[in-house]
Length: 388
Image 1 (cartoon, rainbow, N blue to C red):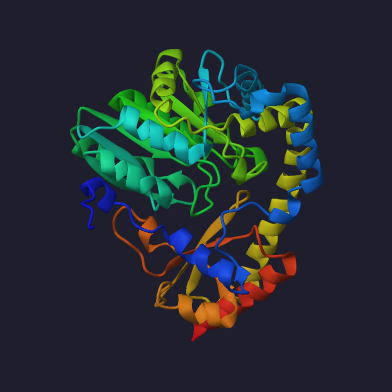
Image 2 (cartoon, one colour):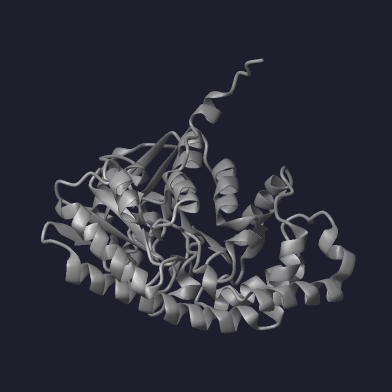
C-alpha cells in the first residue's frame, strides 16, 4: 500500500552529516566528519559507576515515565552548572530536553509560525534548518566572518523584512560549521539590534563547557529577557544520554514544558545518570580534561593546515569547539568526496549548511575522532586532493 505523506515530511532530507557518517561507519578512513566527542575520552568504567550509583540511590524511579519539564534536582544542578560556566540563568526556569536538537524542535513549534521571520548565520548548523523552514515565513541567512555574524548586514536585513515578529538563531561560541566565536563587540551590537527591532534570540551554546577564554554568553549580557538559552551535555559528557536544557522565563518555560508532554522524550533513566554525574563532581573534573585536549587537537589541525595547504586555500582559526571550515578556490567538496574516501579520509561538504548563496568549495573538518598523528596525515592527504 502506498501512503501519502505530508508536505512537511517531504521537506525533511537526509542530513549531509548523517550521509557521510554512514560511510565513515562502514569504511576505514581518517574521520574528519564526526560530530561525536572524542570517544576515547569517555571513561566507561566511571560511567558504569555512575549508573550503579544512580540505581542504588533512586532505584525504580529511574524506570518510570518522565515528569513534566524534568527532574527538579537535575534542574537545580543544571542552573548551578550554568552559573559556573558563565551563564546567568537567575530568574529563569530550566526545562530538561532530549538533547539540544530536541530543545530547538520544541522551540520551533512553540515560538515560530508562518508569520515569523527567522534570521541566522550563513552558513549555519544544518540540523536546525529543517524545523525552521517548516514553521517560519522566511529563514534568512546573514553573513558571518572571523568575528561572528556581521551585524551591520543583519541590521540591513532587519529593515527589509516585515513580519509579525522576528527571531534570531545563533551559535555565537565555537560556531558549527565554521568554528568561529563571536567577538564581545558583536555580541553587544546584536543585543542592541534585538532591542531596537524587537528580536527574540535563540542562543545555541553546546561548546562553552569545553572551550576556554570565550566571551560571555549573550544570555548573560541580556538585560531585557530577550535571549532563550539552550545548553547540552552532549559535548561535555556523552551525546547518547540525550540531555539538553532550555533556560527561559517562567511563563515561557511552562509553555515549553506543556508542549514537551506530547512526546515524553526526555528519559528518566538518563536524567538520573546526569544528576549523579553532577552531584559526584564527575562533570566538573571531566570538563577540565576535555578543554585542554580539544585545544591541543585544534592547534595540531591548524598547524597541519598551515604546513600542507596550497595558497588557494583558506580556513577559519577557532580557539575551541570541534570544527573548522575550509574553502578552496576551484574545488568542489561534494564531487571530490569519493576521491577523498578512496584516499583514506572523509569530511562533510558544507553546501547544504548555507541558507542561501550556497558554496560548493567549502567543507567542515572535525578534530574529535582522529588521533594527533591522523590529523596531520589526513590534512596532508586532503592537501594533495585539493592540488589535483
